[in-house]
Image (cartoon, rainbow, N blue to C red):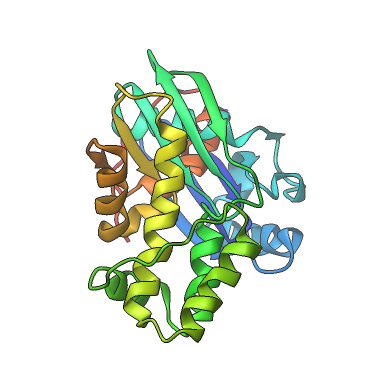
Length: 260
């Protein structure tokens, strides 16, 4: 039996790591994935080693770059991990929404287990990466983008493809639309696409995991578009990594009380 159980979720933009013992979360951290998932996996291992976890751990990897974690004892899908981690955090059935860098996942949870799921197309303009690209196009950081968006009147961004949606944004810039209106249009379009996926489960409670759970403005817009309250949790960005750690420990839940 290991002393520590480690879950690693290597996403296309950010990589999350959660460490648990038999009872609770003992550590969690995020690193940028960068250009190489393999390099990120090595950086995570060095951090785990320096913190004293690596010598007595069982590790499970998930996410876009899970195959890069050569020291993992097992690799499993994101759907399984987000379902397990989401249940541990929220302790309720419903749908878990994860807006990732490459795709958006809608996971239906019933009696603590994954019942069904939907994913958007990787080219769709309803992902976290699209927001990052548009922030760069507008010359802002993500936090500034959300702040501007909250003060703007959203322009229309109708294209489903990221490339064409970016062309629409360039067009709005060329016609002199204020940055705040374009920023509002970007957030509005992503939230609308996520809500369109979630409409398949109209009566289900809806929770948000992943990086966008840190944005109160996105949660507000998504709630409006979905016509139901969307809730989150301070640890929700780590749902996938937590699910992987729980799988490593062969447990369904642990105590989650973690703050940086």
